[in-house]
Length: 480
Image 1 (cartoon, rainbow, N blue to C red):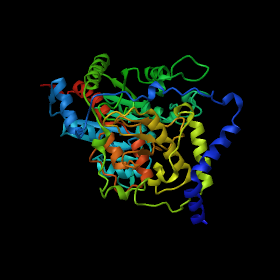
Image 2: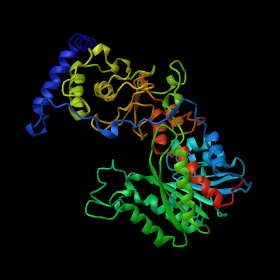
Image 3: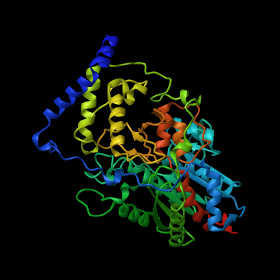
Image 4: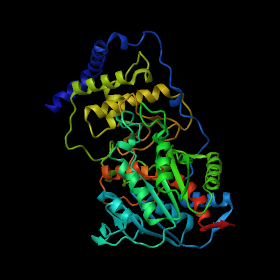
């Protein structure tokens, strides 16, 4: 049966596609139809700003040395004792090791996902990994430790620094309930409350919290107050002994933007001064060349590609479906959703010549996504030199991010970034490099587990920029 469908698809694929697209447009309400003869306008935000780029390999240790040199700072040799929560990949530990080299002691971390605990044990030297962040914050009694497989006492020693990226699901604009209710009423708000409880009980000298830029939007549809004002008010009420400020930062000079909000709290230093230093450093780094995505990717014959279950790899789907009618219907829906991202009159290549021929996972919906985004990229392209078309094909064609000039869409836990240059999906190893961590060990994790860690992690560059002035205020970095 599948052979029969494949034959039909090869022979009549273009006609089926045309028929399905025509039928889909016939079903659209008259008010939704596009006026004939009016070519769509390319969205300005999709123009992919052209920045000065470099094909040099990115190195996090070298980047940290550049930051220290620009600030005229050196390592004092003073040890740093810190803790993390919702620790995920362990990015803070890795960046601190680059900035200070020696004397970095992670007293404990907390993480409930076993796959992330596995990654923490492989990549960091944390002394404990507590399953429950709230239990670790309370520090009243022993809590379950994934590192030792038993109940362990919560370390009660002095903490110089506490770092946590609390759950962003309640604050994200991708959350369908984001504006129908306040994120403070979401079950995910418990993560923020656990962070505040940790600060109250453990009393670190300084703390850093991280979340998505959705906190800058209104608390709800019937409120004029930004949600970040709610969070700042909560901190002032619960931890009044801390001066708190925040900054917005991207992952520059990495090829992905990944804008985030970082809060900095301190008990014995001027946070305003720290924030000013961070903003100056952000401005300095914004003038550095952006690393082109090509410098993060493996060669086509690299054996590491085959180990991941990705589109375009040598691993085939267990359920191969190649039904011509299903593909044509899926493509019609993708074309319809794309709207103004595609011209009204579009000549599609013959089915055997489309990008989806490179997909080894041949589910009709995903093949249609890959093909539709190829046409979107082609329409947006103005034939710049050194182009590299990338699209997040996990998202429907009206919302998925497209990049053409060597930058990368923001990675989420569900992202599937298709490269139209390499004719495959980017691997988790490559995505980890794009976040600044070239030596990260993902062995033992499935593709979906690795993506969950990558989609939730902090960018190495952003952390390094935030940490430099904070470490200076703690005496771990001093003027050179």
